[in-house]
Image (cartoon, rainbow over all chains, first blue to last red; front, side, top):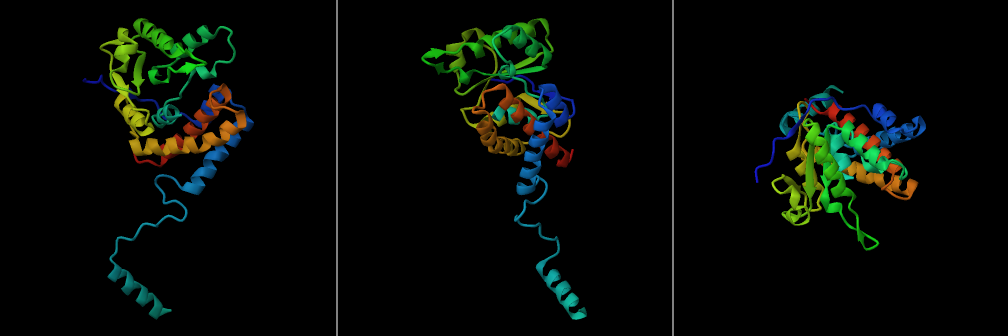
Length: 77
Length: 176
């Protein structure tokens, strides 16, 4: 069955503060909920950043280049 | 819960009849909610037996939405079901309507949502919606403990606020 065209959303992402106000969430509870999100993102990391304990991205240089650079630094020291 | 995560991932602000407190003027409030929203999402797979009696709220609300969309064509509504072709048996008046099948699987529901919605900018992927869904599921345990249930006004509001906050922060980190 051919599905109908998708609905296009042009509005920006709503702010959590506005959403809390619209839904009638108290300022105290809103602060607690914000803290829950901050805490989760600190533990798991954002989708664009490696999480804590996660593998850091390798540099684009080859292993050979990295070894040569490390030896030079060691020699200077 | 998956609907909350998915809709927040698209930058929408979910509303639900769960928010409506008490039995007084409930029908008026349902009409108000439908009229205030640009889109309605109805999952007919949630029509289950409570103490041996089926709950007709969901199909009834679909009827109200269809009526609303008749006099306000800008209002768009979408129908979801777990099993294909079941709507033809349970609600044959809606024959010819597109039904999005999710198979009771959160990821398939998120995928179905991407078939119904598209953002003009910063289109979320199913993986990104899945990340919001996992976050909401993680936080729902504490929220359920706090209120005793997830099917109440306060729990629903909490879930929407955390999902909105999470989705907004994630969208800000996403390239346009």
